[in-house]
Image 1 (cartoon, one colour):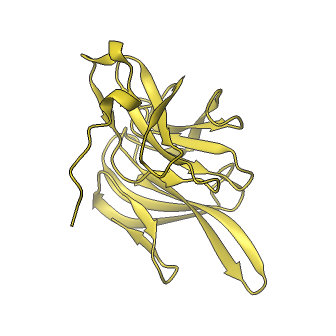
Image 2 (tube, rainbow, N blue to C red):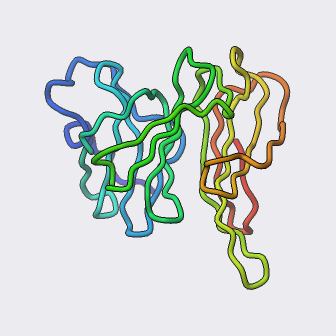
Length: 192
């Protein structure tokens, strides 16, 4: 069963955005280690923003720091507790990466030419892999890895919190628009 839907638009947007074209990006948000729920919201006139809940979704608030450049994006918490947004940027032919060490009050942005992208939503997840007694903190990223067409669904693996992408595997050569990943109960990765 499901509860009645609750419109949270007024909690995660500003009153002067009323007529703007805005949307929550598709796919998943995250829950940080501290319990904060985070997801991304795009306002085509006012930029990419995060919105959050610190009470398990009972109430929500906008983190009012625009992140640019960025369109549909995904957020992930890194091993040191900082936040990273991986962004679609239309017309750039690549992704952009934004990081914050102060819970989204400020951002450092950089192009990521190693993450070729046609302007399409992707997915990024953090994965903690156990190898005997040691734990490896990985980032896994999926997108349509082409500069100009939504093809070549590719999954990449980073061992250094997204500074480099050591492993790249083509999953599907043909048409492959949006993707979304999750960690399954048995530790496998689900890719949709």
